[in-house]
Every structure is written in C-alpha cells, then in structure tokens.
Image 1 (cartoon, rainbow, N blue to C red):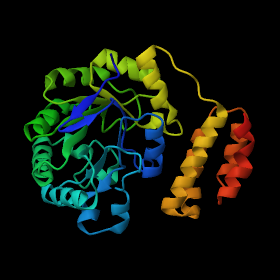
Image 2: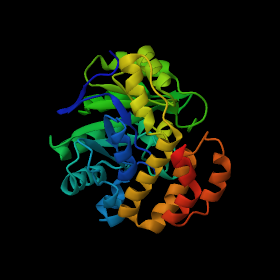
Image 3: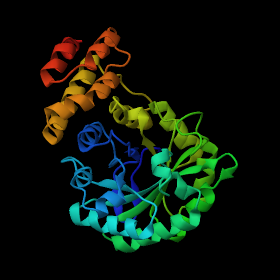
Image 4: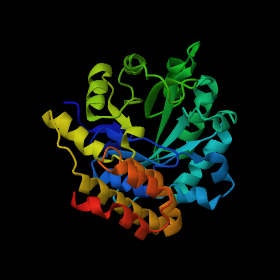
Length: 328
C-alpha cells in the first residue's frame, strides 16, 4: 500500500503525504489548512539561521506551530556550522517542533551566494559538517533531516555524495528535489535519481521525493516508480490544499472526488481569516491576493475576479469579489 505510516527518527507519522517548505507561502495559516485536508506532515517556510542568531523577532514568528499540527518541522538555512547549531538551539528554545530540516536545495542566488541552499549540495563536506553540528545541538530533542537537489548543474551531479555525507553525519531522513540548482524550477525533475537515492540509502533512513508533483496521479506515479517512502507537495498545493485529500483517496481506493467550487472559495476565506489573526487584516489581504488567484484558477469567470483581486485591501473586498462562488 502506497499510503502508510512513516518514522523520522523518533517521530512516528500516520501518513507519508507531506507539505514542503515553500518560501512566502507555508506560514501556519496555510499549513493549518493543509493539515485539515489531510497533510501528514508540514514544514515551515525556510528560516534564516543568521536572523535567528541575531534575535530577529519576525523570523521567530515564522516558526509558530498551527493549532492542528500534531507534528511539524522547522526548516533552517545557512552556510556556517556554528551559526546553524546556534539556530537549532534557538528553534528548540522557541518551539516544540518535532523536526529540524536543513535547506540544502534552495536555488535562489541571494541564498546560494551566502554558501547556503544549493551551495551545500555542491559541497558535501561542508554539508556533513553542518548536519553533524545541528544533530549535536538538537541532542535528541528533535529529528534532523535534509532537503537536497540533484546537483549544481548537469556537469556537477552530487546528490549521492551529499546524501552520504548527511547520513554519515546523523541525518534522520533525506528529501530529494530531483532538479539541479541551474534548472531552478524549470525543465523536468529526474525521478530516476530519486530511485537511485532510495537504493543508495538502503533503508537506513526514509527518503522522500519532491519535484513535478501537481496531481494525485503524479504522487502515485512517483511512489510507484521510485519506491520512495513519501512525497512532498510544494507548488502543487498552492491554492489546492485539497490535493492531500485527493491523493490519499487515490492511494487508498484508486479514485478520488472533485472539490466543488464553493468549497474551494470557502477554504480560501478560512485561510484569509486565519492569516488576518496572525498578520493583521491589511497584511493578510495583500498576501491573499496571489493565494485567491490560485484558489480561483480554472473556475468559470475566475479570470475577471482575479483582475479585481489584485486591488483587494479588506476582507469585505474579498467577499464582494468571491461571494457569488460560495453558492456554486
């Protein structure tokens, strides 16, 4: 059976369908919505180790647990082992998270130039040093995992070396986004590399897959073709938290039910309301412009509403734009 429990270190999870860390998106309001719709495990957006070490209050707010998260992971990024160890200590002081994930895959230039993100996949020795430091800092209070890319570019494919360095340093799980740093989010993810990593790990720790997961069928195919232990939705969950429910239905029964338009829009309003509690109405309404565009994608008449959404400044504005869909 492709939907099954999975264990990360000492953390026992009921399922293996995860929400990935998504910068600027996976705040606790969105994570809460995804949990409501079946996500087995969730990750915060990436948190700067440097900012944590400097005591940045806004950064600390990114790490808060959603009320319905039985277990969640805080993802941190940085290029120096001492700073990452200090950040891990702060994470465990400020939260009761079950897991700390180390970002070794972000391809964004401003992250990479600091020696963090994808720069670590290219430098397995330094990656291993960072993992070892974070594992020591966590001291068994949280599992420690890594998320890597397949390499820097097609001439520098280093996921095997990076994974082995992480395993030797004590990582409890590895996630592979099977694209290179040079690809960014373009082209296709090479799932054969994920299958190879599963074989390389030999069951020592769970291996999770990411990249090109936009439908429940994609998730099933990744599980079938690569034999990975679980899948991690990122862009595929934006405006579509229902993908978790649908995927679990597909894996359990072989089919799934479509979500009514009214339910999609209603869920968008729930997210808006939760975000307004955390960030204030003005900030929440700005942030939800892109998210309501995603919720309304593919809905008849949605294009005209999305044009209006870019000017929405209050919750009342959103109701004016979208209330007619609540009866659809």
